[in-house]
Length: 596
Ligand code: F6R
Image (cartoon, rainbow, N blue to C red; front, side, top):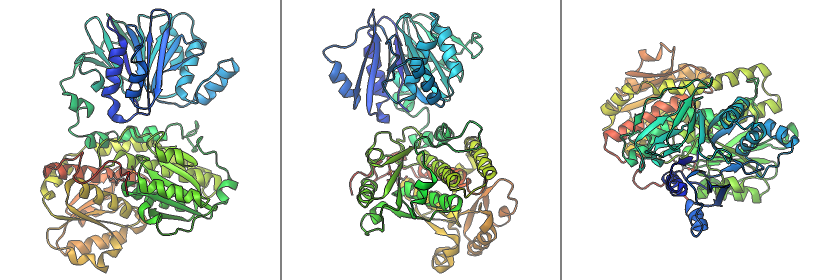
């Protein structure tokens, strides 16, 4: 998610716009732009690259004016009278774009945001507020939006739906931003907009109305965070913030990819057909670390739903072992950053051998996104903490949707089953929120067991894949030695390590192997391990065999990994806190591994 900033007052707008964007730049942008009304026109200056490139571009000719907005990409209509900045996704933009092209609008980009600018131009009737309302009636999706209009140079209009937007209250000036860090140097008095609210912001007045146009009286929210806390949205660490962002990250990743009737998956980015898919005799999923763990779940989904054989490999192994890859291979690389060097090299090597390539990544314009033939983005927003959390859950969501999409094309699942899965998918964000609503027991376990030197994670089937991710999280941020085992493998060696008091996290959510997992749990209990079971709500059985149970909401066993990983992330987080570790920057690790 990019940063949005806006200013109206008596000072030079560009000054605040550049400062505000710089405060949000830690999220990593590929471009920057500002739009300022100069008394006659709205002047837009944009530049590819970091904010420094924009500063350099305009240093001798800074746009002059006391009202303006900024973002990575401010968009204008045909006339240049309307400028819009937008975070989020306009789901029906393609249909709107077609309609607007028919009416003679000329588009300069492929973005959904530009559609909003042209739509405003189209419906504009001289009344700025009313015209914006008409735009809002027509667009669907999630957004925070700020509008600027040459004919009304005393005001900015902003609104939001499922994306944050805050108004900073100054003295004879007001500020708008997508996030508090952008305004904290200027004011601590804010209005936090709620979904559906629209604000008309002038230098000395702010009028907020709800969807029906009724006036809303808002309380001033005093920000008492310091600048660092503000970047973390009030959370103690980026990791905790990102864990809590998962409901939204997952919702954003799904949006635009579910058909209007709520029964099918649409992947406008891919447009695959049966011929395309039948060409492949194998799918490879290649990635590193957490992304590799997501790939393991991805394999399960694709094989189970679309019935195509899948191999998963860590990129650093794959690239050096002369893999059997040719034009009948579909290579899927997974990478949050899109910059991991081994993953990028594996992608290049596979392309050289003729494979079709698809990237699942979170960073628009990253090296992997540019190199792959096709890209599916996880819309998780910037992930700052070294330990990956929301990237993993969004990768799982994307893999599940991709597998359903492939299954629909190949006809391996009946329509009703696809519809049922799509229905369950839509419940996931709320179910993650529910999982996040009660962290106290997890904190207690972390305090109780956070000083153990070894922890084991066990599970079967998809539970094993999640166990691997849970163990990695614990290792990397708390430095506790953690190992994940396929529960059935225990007695082939590892059981020797299970002695009195050793914590074992046992995942038991997969119905097909439930009894088998229970018998493995009994084996470790018999050696006096302390067992924390992870179960689905409604499971009354597990608690009889374990010391503690953490429950997640009930869903299909294919989707449950997206829920069970959440307590494991929290357990790792609170264990690291218990041990006084630097959660966001664990020792020896970098966020993005761009060297071999
Ligand atoms: C673990 C973690 C790493 C990354 C790995 C791949 O929490 O963050 O294991 O998952 O370095 O990074 P990306 O996904 O950027 O390719």
